[in-house]
View 1 (spheres, rainbow, N blue to C red):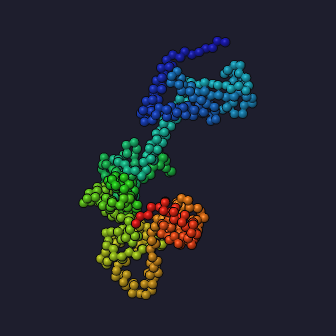
View 2 (cartoon, rainbow, N blue to C red):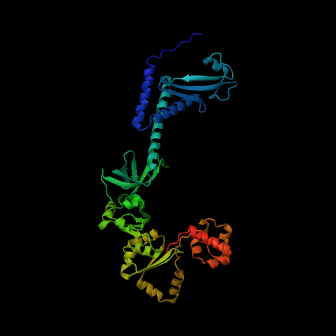
Length: 450
């Protein structure tokens, strides 16, 4: 049987031009060509699902070499037809492919270039929509990986004198009033340095497309990142920030410790004549910064955290996490701070509930026997001594579990205690022969230094 075929005049150049167009779109959108091709495939499937059904068996062929673009729909020839998306009757199938039998698979090849005008419009709309979604997802993943990192942008505009918009290059970031430093003023084009606090792909109760990048200059994390940028010892991990408390625009207190004996953490942060810390202070609009050495007893740390006030004495209870801070009468206002801000920040930094009293108040209260008794009861427990590091007996070779159990039952629970034990005492616990064996194991395995 002769079959009529349409001439494919200029079809190949058109298809090649279409593939070139996909490449141009990928370059323009900053996407890979494969990503754009997959989006186009999905757009064709969605458009043809409207023609054949949502669960239709569809395959998209995109071959740049031939070149060829086609959509194949496969349906099984059955009777009766229960699912029109995946099945077709023998009568209908015979009209498309004469001689086909029941049980066979009918494959219909569609040419997207011959799609109806409405269908082509749907394909274009779906393609554009999915390209935008893909762009948003890529931006979201890129900025999500930068959460809690420092970024530079440029001030764009205010909205309702409350919400600040910042140009981050590929996207706009927003900075709510609560994340800003009070009384800061920016003009269009001014540089804005901030930390990325939160990145969201979408938000409830808004029709605006994401992603949404929330910036912060008022958080403690922003100050921490500034110190990491300005202080090489912090960036390298020699000095570590162990705590931070901040009241934006007023004062920040930072707890630091050194991981090397020869490095002073406070001196490293301040620098010679305060050179290092001044750059951070300028970025914060001359906000005051107190740096506290996290090396000492809780009382010493609390006393330093109360800066700028001079503290006479601190009585801290590690069990209840409460502390009494005694200050001279003329230091009370400094210790408490404006609206209680200083003592509140010190409490947040140290994790202790702080009660500030002047010496006059304390002496007056201590005149009462009941008050003295309450105070002594509250702070009578000695501060727990830091546990010394010890080596378990199991670290010694050739020491059986039975010998370890006997030693531990006698109160010798570490290698250090075993080294100091007398041979006669070991003989009473283990027997003379076993005691000599243990002493030999210790002498071979342990290097004793004075």
